[in-house]
Image (spheres, rainbow, N blue to C red):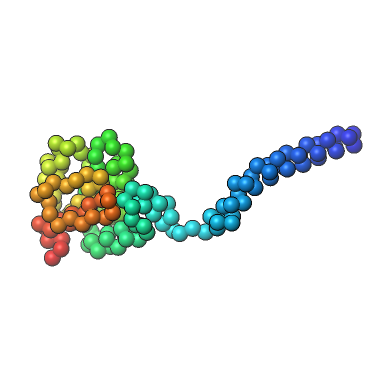
Length: 160
């Protein structure tokens, strides 16, 4: 009976030693680089924005842009249909635009002008283009990094 107890303890001790031997090379450098612990509140969205737009601290900069818009106004976000990075970026813009109402419109090149014409109304503060080049007829857009263009709805008095 005593031999079984020693074997049991020895087996679990050996398994624990293997666990430590395998995990220390992974966990050790992360602890030394301070990657374990509290992170910024916008850490994940900043990483996504940085990867897609090359804008560091993008969540805060985007929030500053959205806060400059009247709260009752909404946004229309144009994404390219069947382009995963464009659709993901559009969803990220929608997430960061809270508490404003948003509408995501998936477009193909030929339907962009028609969708823009349908999006213009007095309740829309501006249009976002995610990995899509806006038509030349829209002027006054501002670039947010390399992938997002924001065009305020100037014709409806947004900037006045």
